[in-house]
Image (cartoon, rainbow, N blue to C red; front, side, top):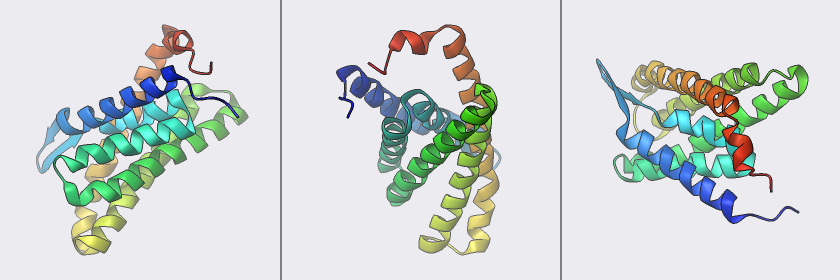
Length: 173
């Protein structure tokens, strides 16, 4: 069993904080509200930290953001964003092993994760808050937010890869 390094715990906490801040404060206005950039860090968390620490950072960071504004969504967000991150990592890993194309794997993993996220919120809202007819109105905005998250996370991963920043972090040791 691998030991947990202080560096990995600190980077995990950093991704939790980045996810929370991006969710709470970095917003793109839309005609019927806004989308936030939290999903960028949900995906980056899992692509950088892997399935365990990345999923924890994504779910906890997103859930904490909802505790400060949308408390009724916090339990659902914790589960939904954790699932989004884990599924994105699973698809990413599967495709990377099959194709050895990192960018394609990131895009596909992110897209499947974003679709799962939109479906998760649709189900959560339908079960706990509204009717399916009302919850379906939010689905396109959730998909848009997820799509923006995928696009920006892939761009950031290209920068991190090109600058060898991830290698310098050396999180495996």
